[in-house]
Image (cartoon, rainbow, N blue to C red; front, side, top):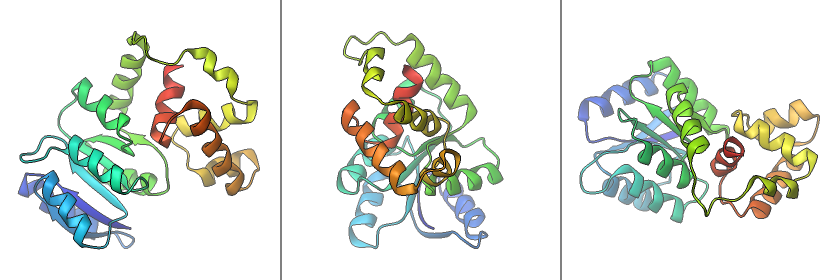
Length: 211
């Protein structure tokens, strides 16, 4: 797994690189101090498999950078790493298709485990962030939000898969649980995205929690 670390704090960057490079299956291919630098890095170098990115940075913040990266490489996995628990940041990160949202206060072994999980295709976030996101969705009264009746457009099998996606399972794990092929799961995920007019797996998880 090839990773890019983006954080304006040199100590954080160096610490994360040291921790990650100790893992046999991970390699830090670069470190950047802001979003603009990260975007340029991905444009001129081989694209990393995963970007671990801070949110508040000078020049270009992590949310804006994530948006630009996903426009160019929709399948690029991005995990937002921050000390901030601000509602707006959490919602925007999920909206832009981030693969996860972690707090810098998490232990090193938890961060490593999260990186591996995200690399496999699961949506990941710390317990604190998951609780906050769930609370936000429960109290949200946006009139443009799709009504719960939209669930009626999903088949029983699609609803089963949607629930497992929201629990953080990868396509391979879902296939094993439902005794289906991984290709069948991928096809179901694609159909759900089309039916619900969503773009990413993360948005599917958020949709499930909301409804």
